[in-house]
Image (cartoon, rainbow, N blue to C red; front, side, top):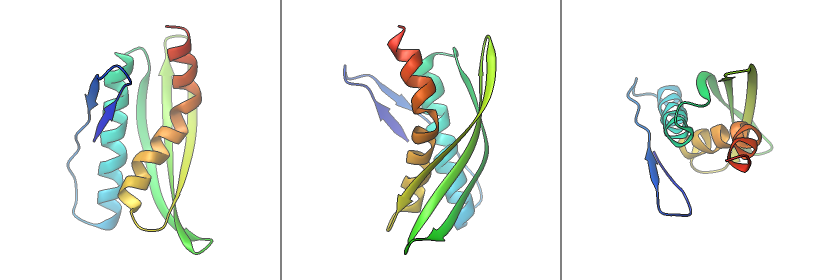
Length: 110
């Protein structure tokens, strides 16, 4: 998983796991978490608690649960992404959805 920043910087996350639909979702979500942690340079620590694909509304909804720890607080985050054709990509985008408020505030104060 590679996340890019507007100034050209790239942050790479990598994960290995079981070859199955669930394993692939978890690996993609974990790689997104690793890439995000590189981007924030250990100011916020994320932990992937779970990832699940659910069939709803004639599409697949990928849901992730994360914990986020900052020096002064900790919180639990949930993100989702509605996908029709690429659930692993949906897992990575669900991680970004879950973390967008925390990271938006983090980058706004930098």
